Length: 143
View 1 (cartoon, helix red, strand yellow):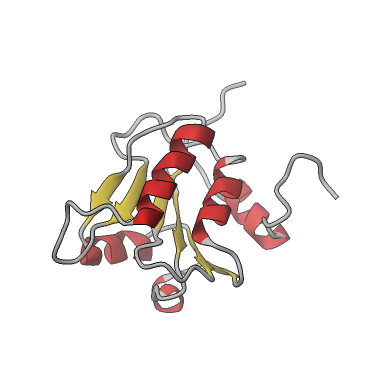
View 2: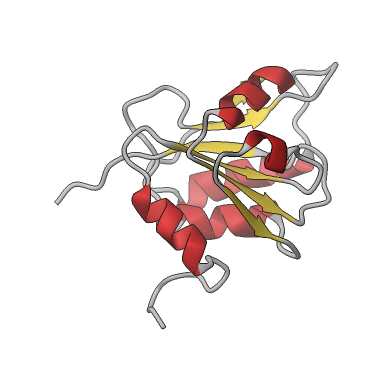
């Protein structure tokens, strides 16, 4: 057992988060996302929401402070200015819990898939809300 580690972060996911280096990306996705097809490393957290997983991850994960958009979501197809409720929740979590609170950037759907394909890992949740997908770029922790 460990202290101050959210219980929903599985041992394998903790290994992944720790193994990632500065600039590596992890993608937290909803149940509809083609994670198995796109991910070279893949974790399933069925039964958990993407917002719960995001909150747990950012509690231990430094966001990159050297790039403009260290947190990216998928644009709504046909309405890129729309902000789905889950994306608003992602934004609230990043602002309240991240070590580097930022405004979320956006990527067009297929650009998001391409970025996910090159990510260090994908975490598929049981999230049923559409557009419950976010990419996080890892930063550094200073001594």
